[in-house]
Image (cartoon, rainbow, N blue to C red; front, side):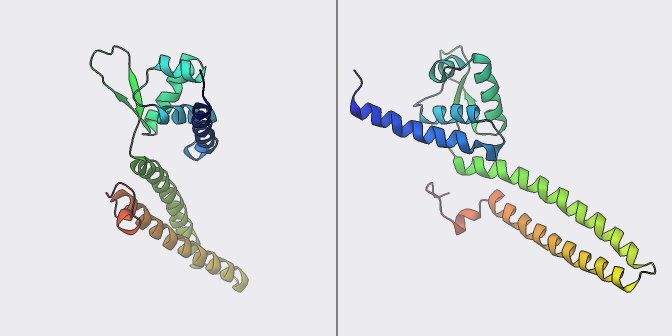
Length: 180
């Protein structure tokens, strides 16, 4: 028999799972992978691909692909249980570390790409200034150099922010529940 309390618990869980699935685009994953993550989050223990398939009414192939994606994102891990022959997976419990790992990798990649573009462009614009340039064009180049120098300063600052996360010193500034 299904009680009102059970229904409310299921509704509460479903609301969170739905929200997670809708917001997983920040991790560049599909809503179905987000639903898988949300479902695994509420499980008391590790799940097999068959468990996931039954819970989400999706194909085992979809579950396998989803789990691989979540493992690559460092959000899910394969675990071992004595006597179990099938592979087991569970959500990593440290969301703070998951966030840090994922975003720092992407931030660093973006910082490096943008910083390299600015440095290359600055060198090119400095070479332009060494030539005879009419006053109006010189002003445009100097303004662009100022903007690119400002951008480089921002990327250096952003690197320091990433350093705070990677060193976990961010938790000296903003406390988390686990008191790292």
